[in-house]
Length: 363
Image 1 (tube, rainbow, N blue to C red):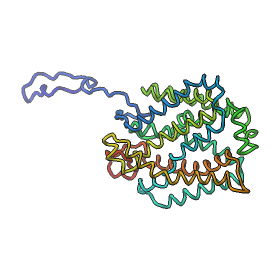
Image 2: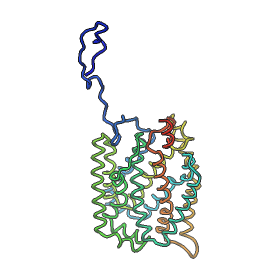
Image 3: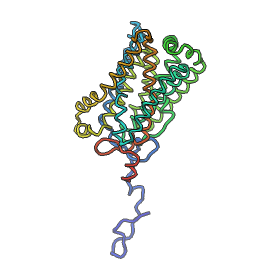
Image 4: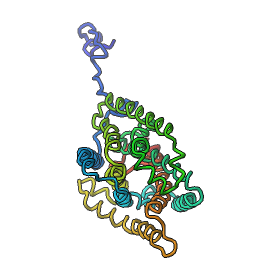
């Protein structure tokens, strides 16, 4: 019990009147953050727009699925290669990210070394390298969406196995389980033994695990009031279950994963602070295009050289996978390091990221 100020006997006031504590304290609205009591903050406009655009893009493709199936479209590997190439720029500025976060230049050396090791692995042990690439892709895709949501909502990013599988599993596991007739020839073109190594039972178990993770994640989002987030895992499962994998994966990589990552990169570049604060997205996009142009061209030229080099021509599909795998491993490691360092934590007023060290200094 507490008493009102007018009940002080020394001031000759009226007798003490009990006031219930639960009435004296305003009730807090439920938080949108996982497992936290912190009040929800206004979502970042740029990331919210990128999320909406990716939902509309893949939702539109899903709506066209019956027409795509009736016309027999979407099965060509050209859709896959085109989507992967269109998504290349999202990792083309990895060499700039450490500088944005005031990190040591030694990270760039490690990045290059890991990329080279990936190429060597694909040449020395393509079976293990391809399976490892699939596993890394699940973790990278899933953790990227978890971090995207956390940064958009300005809440701490937390490691969530179920959410990682719910977002990262559909692009990889659903095609492996439901589109074997189209996926296995692609895997066999990269490594002939891999389709036989991934048994039917393994694919079924992986699919069941992903579906359980989707149910858990959707339920958690609905309880937290994040209805639009709850739609996303269902959208991904439906897309990869009904649209031919070459088209679905290509569209996902270019219009979902890469689009969201580029939006995060625009926020992380300190030179974009003033533009984004006033709602100008054009100048940051042009700046990113200039930054990503040379690395993207270099990757494409390398791929073309592998495919057309006289006397040593490589099959375009395996060559594309080898180049992407060599770039994916260090890229995924760098993104994970960035997220662990501070992405999804409380942001600076200028729109950039606070590292853990900066957070400790300000607390």
